[in-house]
Amino acid sequence: MIIGTKTIPSAGRRVRTLLVHICDVCRAKFETFSGKCREKSIFTYCSPACLSLGRSATGPSGRLLETILVDRYGVSRATNLPQFTEARKNASISKFGVEFPLQNKDVAALGRSEESKSKKYQTRKKNGTIRRSYEEDKLYDGLCSLFGKEHVERWKYVNGWCIDLYVEPLDAYIQYDGLFWHGYDRCTEEIECFEKPVDVVIYKTILRDTQQNIWFASQKMNLIRVIGPSQIQNFLNLLI
Image (cartoon, rainbow, N blue to C red; front, side, top):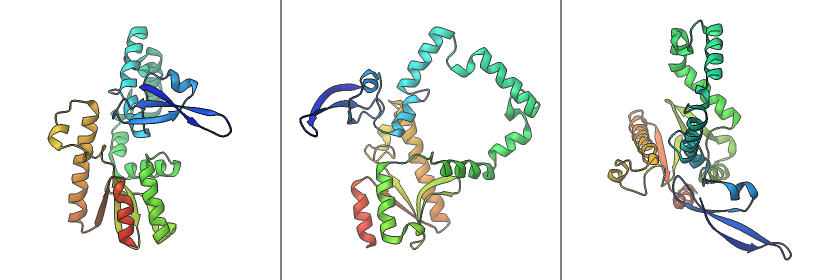
């Protein structure tokens, strides 16, 4: 949500207006330049991750959309409208011989296979649709300057997980963990209360991180976690 405005000097005599926001997911305070669309926004989000969560079914935007759809059309999702469900069933029957693709055993088995998961991941990597952050980019650029871009691979697919970085000269996998999304800014007991929808996501991330630590250790593979933006430069300095 927008909580205020401020002005900053610009070129010449111009003055630029900044909008001050509170993220409707993580409650972080951030600023953006003003604009007609931004000024009319009901909800605002500080990052692509928060935007994705905000638009999900449990997020603020998702809940508002559901309310509008129920009021106007009597359904909670646009894909539940009769014209969509009928078209979807007809397409599935035509391609797979059943009303729903997963009712076809061959399709269901293919979707659960490791080969299918790897293929989906490689497509996302090629198209550049894997989530990234400013901090991850900073860590990647720093490692490339030390070891060369050809020796640093982003988004390495390992055992069903997308690992942020793999550095060949170190033979090490590196994960950047943000303080908020990986649960480092609060105790686990507080997160487990699930007072906010975002706590469910954070708790699942904590469980996944633990699983990764155990698996990498069992395989005698090096997994390094860089925790929080303040540790990025410290970590890079250790490698010099």
